Amino acid sequence: MKHLKGIVVKSTGSWYHVKTHESAIIECRTVGKLKLDDKKLTNPIAVGDEVDFEMESDEGGNKGIIKHISPRRNYVVRQSPRKKHQLHLLASNIDQALLIVTMREPNLKLGFIDRFLIMTEPYSIPVIIVFNKFDLYSDDEISQYSILNELYTKIGHRVLHTSTLTLEGIDLLSKLLKDKTTMVAGQSGVGKSTLVNCIEPDLNLKTEEISDFSGKGQHTTTFAQMYDLSGGGSIIDTPGIKSLSFTHLEIMDVAHNFREFFKISEKCRFSNCTHRNEPGCAIIKAVNDGEINYLRYQSYLSLIAEVEDQNYWERHGDV
Ligand code: GDP
Ligand code: ZN
Image (tube, rainbow, N blue to C red):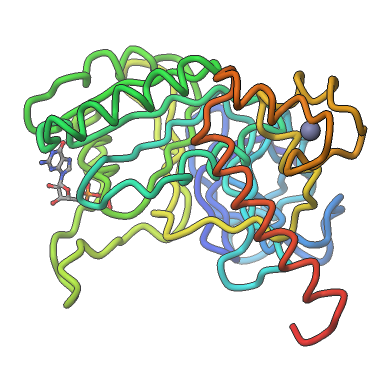
């Protein structure tokens, strides 16, 4: 039996589109049990996975069966929006993530960026944060954007602003994507499809306008999909995010994934310090000294409160 290799470029739940080195796309499925390191995953195979497969011998043989997944260099998981005890693989083997946000339409929720960064931080995946729809921002929103730009640049992320109307920032963004594999994410309506189409017009990602009663554009992507960029590199488009929960984590997981907290926390008096009100907490001191940004600290507190509530209910039954 001939063994073939390829990269998963699309997954629809039960079928996977695998691209071979010769750029052929073969529809593959899995049979029986693949060896999985984590049973809590809703999807065993992610877009970006390198797989070995065999062609099915019967029925003319134009479909394949995945036999093996190569060890992942990194991956991004989110808590499944439907099943809170399960995790969903968004993408694997990526060089960087692109998070698209906007100050308005829809308004940026405080803390949303911090929640996203919890997903990329375990593998220290570099993140580019793009503030799109810059043409719409009021003076106040521009000031707020500047504050956030400074905050995230200071902790080592790349921040820029774009507009698909004026095309400001588009060239810079294209350069940042060149020759890299980039996972692209954002809340529905931030302009992700429009932005990707600006960079790569031939992709023609669907951007359906106003179709539901709320007046929000209805999102049409439901599965992650990888596309090649004509200038080199590729993007993995992921479904629009509604909200991100992290109740599968423990408090210490959250603390460790706030990168600028981690180093300073060595100086906390207690090794299991949660940085809330413990005496001798180096994080609280750093917030008071302005070394850690107050907004980041607020996000941290609200995340650990959520995690703690969840853990409480799990120990005391009911949910
Ligand atoms: P997605 O859900 O993130 O893929 O968002 P879409 O690409 O479908 O865009 C949602 C809406 O925002 C559409 O009406 C776009 O025309 C609009 N939009 C996208 N980018 C910009 C921008 O830079 N400026 C303005 N004013 N509107 C934009
Ligand atoms: Zn502390």
